[in-house]
Image 1 (cartoon, rainbow, N blue to C red):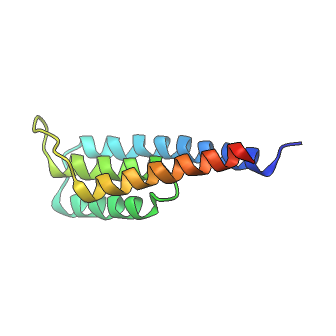
Image 2: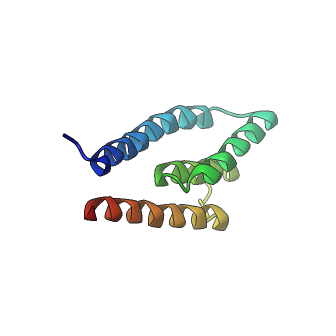
Length: 105
């Protein structure tokens, strides 16, 4: 029988996989030319993803990538977005801590 930690890891990695699938949908929309209201809506989605990103690093990384693609046009350098980078770094640390805690139990 599976322990609680093993079940948690399966759901955790499954959540990351579903996030990557969702990112595929968002990336397709970002490849099209967006109007100003659409860009604003995508920016709001990215901020929500960053807020929820502390639960899973894939969510925070998706939010950071959305903000980068909205901020810069095609062919321009993708500079850093400091707030998004900080949230992504913290979420990666949280994810590592969760995996280590589950592995030790």
